[in-house]
Image 1 (spheres, rainbow, N blue to C red):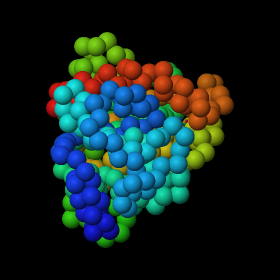
Image 2 (image 1 turned 120 degrees about the vertical axis):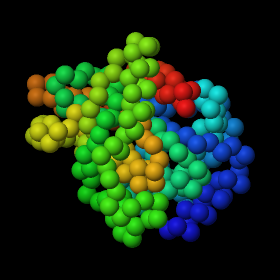
Image 3 (image 1 turned 135 degrees about the vertical axis):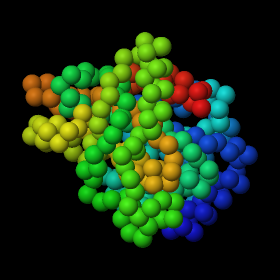
Length: 269
Ligand code: HPA
């Protein structure tokens, strides 16, 4: 595995002179940010040795090297989900490659169902913490030397980034909420009883991604910042039929605000 990671990182490095220290995962809802990146080099996932290939509609599957707000960035246009059939090692492979490439900061975005009754569709939720409710752990197996065998998780989401985001949102008048993201394996959306259970567990939002990548990034000492777009509500009395299209539509509507927040965050680095 380590050899494959190094092989992939070397291959990527030989294709660009850029050496960004910040990576962005453009999940559902951050696609528009890709258009704002001054792209120097775009590499389709299918061309990258050892890289999995994304299969979900709305995820393009390219690694972008470029500049955002004057800062060099590496962006993943589309991510790999456990429900697609990938192992956790595959889902988090790009994070391990990022570490080899010298990435120090990781910005992630996703779409989720809000289970906090105060949330509204279209809310941007700063992820302050997560609950790993996935069936397999991304650090299962021999420990990688990037971090300890038993990693501390008391601040997986960087406090400095969170404070910066709060300040920027206030300055720009962007409404934000905050909360705990619970990651499920998907691909089903939740039954009303499951939404209720996740709320009782302490979640504010439920989604099918992010948690494995954040765990591995944190184990690699990469600082993490995450935002979730609330695209539907798993709140008693407000539950209606959900579809992937509906999730994308709701996420698209707030993309500009999310992109603005991310850009301002990157500029401050
Ligand atoms: N549940 C799980 N994943 C999601 C949801 C949801 O309600 N909305 C967007 N992604």
